[in-house]
Image (cartoon, rainbow, N blue to C red; front, side, top):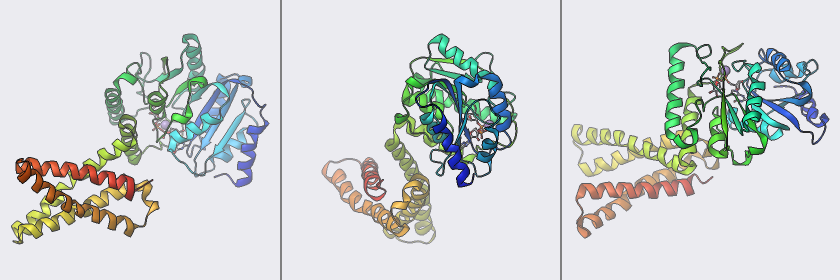
Amino acid sequence: VAPAPVRAALRGTIGELPVGTTLRQTVVVPTYNERDNVEALLERLAAALPADDTEIIFVDDSTDDTPAVIASLQETCPIPVTVLHREHATGGLGGAVVEGMRAARGEWIVVMDADLQHPPSVVPTLIAAGRRDGADLVVGSRYAGGGSSRAGLDGGYRRLVSGGSTLFTKVIFRNNLIQVSDPMSGLFAIRTSSLETEELRPLGYKILLELIVRNRPGRIVEVPYAFQPRHAGESKSSLSEGFRFLKHLAILRFGAKRARMLVFAMIGVSGLLPNQAALWFLHAVLGVHYVPAAIVANLVAVGWNFALTDTLLYRDRRQHRSFAGRFSRFFVLGNADLLLRVPLLALLVSGLHIGVLIANLLTLLISFVVRFLILDGLIYKA
Ligand code: GDD
Ligand code: MN
């Protein structure tokens, strides 16, 4: 992290640029610990783009001295360079890109990585293609004819993951993505006039997907490019980034609340396992009567569900209430479930003459929806 005076000076450079000017292009580069890449990146961008019609904005979440390294390069780089260092890295890579977009003054905004996996020499080609074809969005594609990913995607494993998740994503969003061969690309150019940053809810790496789904740019074209090996350092992607991607997909596809309900349903289904196991152990192994055994099994399942719900589903909403507060409410809700289900079951079976198994399933479904609504609207109220 750059010391405060350096950061203030960096921010100050925005003010020095003529107010209200419109440039041809703004290059937005998200950086997370890329100190050994920024010099080569700036050199190659300067060689590829006209200095008087371009600006470069780094949006930085680094824990190393990347912002200071960039600051030391500002003098020698002919293109005006700005660094926005974020204190709170909300939204990860995508959040950083959107923040850079908000500050951009170019007619086009080009987004690219700092590690030279995206060749700077392609940037003018993206803009030229967009202008020639009257496009709103130009996607740099590893998969379009002439593009390639072999060099950058080291090993068959990463190629498999990349190809598999791209196919999966395209199936889920068929209409939106029908014409895009590489919706996961981190290299693209968007016409600023067709950008609506207010609509965006960035979450992690796939900012292009976010943009296509929520902003629905009219005309999209693709430019093939060869994905390069990383220049220095290592990828910031991780397993937790993979989970964040799945969460992002679910939210984009179903909306935030229905995505949470889906995860809640999956947790609920997973709770059947400890429930049955506990019931079997108490009843079959220890010989406990089935009613108290079922009640204890229900307690076990409630504990299981709480652990998963609290850590996976509502991790970012826990600060609103203490652990004891969350646990006790969840516990009451999970067992109050029995108070709702038992009379409901009696009503369905004796009153409406529905079969016991079907009726039981219905009570589980009804209780599931009721519990989710209470959980989502009251216990973990945002
Ligand atoms: N500001 C900020 N905050 N920048 C970040 C963060 C973050 O939390 N995480 C990563 N970055 C920056 C990195 O410093 C780098 O400049 C760029 O985002 C890409 O990160 P990498 O870690 O190099 O990503 P990758 O090579 O695994 O994947 C890239 O290429 C894929 C194929 O084009 C990304 O662009 C993917 O989104 C893309 O699918
Ligand atoms: Mn990379």
